[in-house]
Length: 401
Ligand SMILES: *Cc1c(COP(=O)(O)O)cnc(C)c1O
Image (cartoon, rainbow, N blue to C red; front, side, top):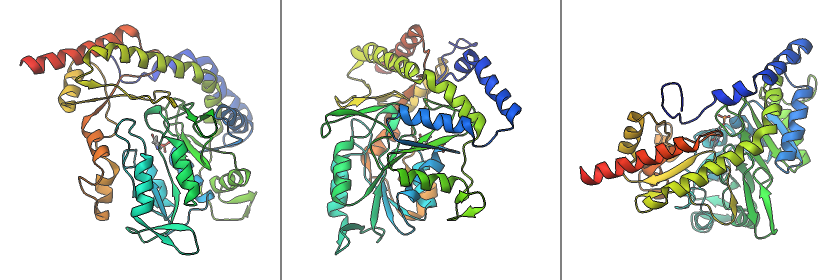
């Protein structure tokens, strides 16, 4: 509950207040050494976050969008290539692809998990692409370009179904770049390898965002690329720093996409709490699941497959009359969110590309019917009960009124 008696969608104030002394000491250390960009705090964070993700390397960058863009370039995606992703995501996923000079194609998401549907990826590669003779590469019928990479998005804190995606990628010679911007610490059970695998360790590379509202958030902008491929990590290190191999030796034209030291220092402190915060999110999710059990006919709770250990970046329900319900909850002082109200293929920015309603029905249904409820570490059980009671009240008002 916040000062007005309302329940916020997200509480970013309390965790920082609790860690205030430690966070301020990071700023002091930066002032004392004037180490503002790069340096030991960045290197320390990179080591610790790589270990957290079970990845061999982590390269800190300025945002999740930079992480996606640098990962794509370093994985060898070239201007004119086509990269496949999903329309049920944040636009940064497709922005990064465009900024590489590549084009994107979409496959729809699965109707239960809302992440990439591997069967639709298979259909796309078999039926919507031709096969380049000799090159062993699919070519998109829509864009005319060679398909060189796939970007599954681990959405709402749950990974995509990676085994079949990785299988298809290896069969069709595609790089896999995970968009792990909402999945710090999420795990996937690989039947193929018979073990749990961490988000950020499965593809050729992965992109993380540390935007303040993510499960691990900076006090500003930050991101990272994780990978097990040393050459790829080296390439991302160059790209983030103007293509420098060493000072003033520019092997390629790069970007200004570095991680600043204060953010890295803050992230190191918060990383120590991430596992516990993720556990708290899971407990809250379980409590919501139980509270919603009597409403199974009208509210669909998040689907958690046996292969998934999600980290509940968001707790997303599927319901009819979503917009009215959201209004009702807002009036009751309960914060909610919609992720996302317009699927990427229908965004005004892409109007010229010619997609229309009906092209990706599961993503369109998600945009119309999904609602994200309050979810953050420290969410109180009694507040969750109030949220669920308000949803139930709305349902009964509607059915009687
Ligand atoms: C947050 C987010 C991004 C972008 O991260 P920024 O740090 O804001 O650039 C990309 N993809 C997804 C799925 C995200 O949620």
